[in-house]
Length: 139
Length: 138
Image 1 (cartoon, rainbow over the protein chains, first blue to last red):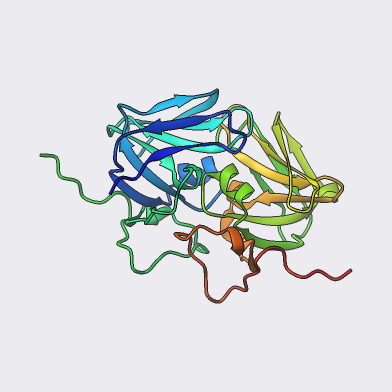
Image 2: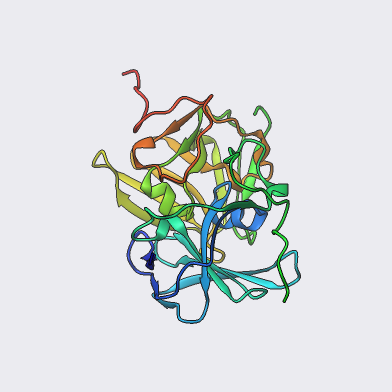
């Protein structure tokens, strides 16, 4: 089944689109996601970075992740909506699911960075939880 | 939450403080909160605007809300962190609690605007929910 990754911010100034299929959908509780969003976690859909087209002016804020690699966050310069992030450690761009034009198919597969989750947040007990990132195959 | 509340944005350009007791503590699932945060809901506390001091430049974004009024969000123009919202004419600040230096003090009293919640969002069964705003005394 094809899930179209297409969406944007609330004022319409920033839009993104790609023909790539989503790689993984997750709830991220890391401190950077919390601070960039103003929310306890983000629900993010990761896609291959190549092939994603973004239009409109964005505010880019870059931090160093716990892996030592840069993570870039992008918000609309006009309405402030936090739209997507890019981690240089992976070949992925992660759009925030609520900014998709059609988020009806979104189903988070895991909770990550639960070690920094807020004590009052409410997780789905049916999902696998990882203190930081899940183990990844390097091969 | 009787201590002084202090917080700010990701890059530190915007800081705020308040000595007031929060008037309410909610999880808001409205589309405006979703799009501002890029998340499924925004946990926020209501503070008297008169007891809220903000330093640093913010960019304001205004929309027409579901009651026909004007709602505003303020975010840091350097790092983008959404800090707070206000409804025009109301003496309240809706502060995004994650931006507090210590967000652990938050205890939500209710979930509001459940009618626009995403199907992949999650709720605490012990917390009351309202389709939009809770009934309010006149």
